[in-house]
Length: 294
Image (tube, rainbow, N blue to C red; front, side, top):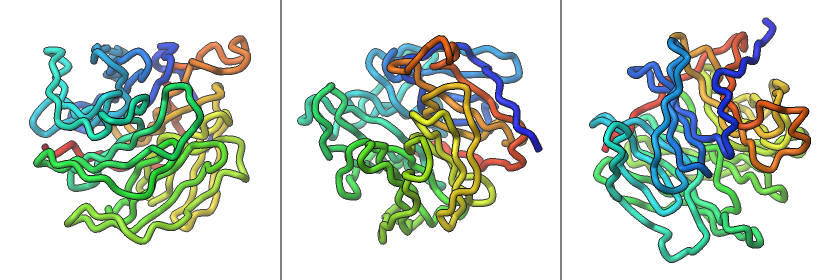
């Protein structure tokens, strides 16, 4: 089946990211990190509503209790888009000037995972950590530090956790065992290295077959990897920097892709850089994303 790629929101975002499909909303929630905006796209009407957060916002999840949990430049917050209000839950890196949160997702039990990175223009450092936010709003830190936290996703049964480092000298995805009851990862091992493809691992998701999809940032591509860590498929994109993939739509068979507008090469060759895209015809479906339980 031939794929079709359509620009569904011509947003020209500076740093589009964080896409999450909510089954109950039938909406795609996503962000522009640099602009500090949370977006909500309704495919049925074609509308895209935007909400100002007040600082850089990088990832999110819908909440059972209403609104969102968001990861921002300064910490983890509850956010009410309708009222424009937020409540601080934690600022675990207040002591690390120049760091901000980056990629995030929920596990199947509704815990929110999010990672951090240095983003002040300085020399890259391994000072990006992964944090787990529990339903009771307790926060814990996991794994050794990396340069650029990314690629968070879970297997269909919730017992394998994936995470990545986008840094050019690393560009690796890891898998680890995951205890759904305690939310504890263990036995981390290399899963896929991007040396054989053009792009580096950015935002990711897992499909119903257990395959790992990620945006190949810098490589004009979206990539699918089997549960065994083998390259399975590459879809060429019309933009240099796709940044996050997420299945959505009524049948979870549309692959939405955010992208980055800042820092791209020849803009004339990619006028839609920074926009939101929808890929149809992949022949596969995604998984419902759990809401944050807190």
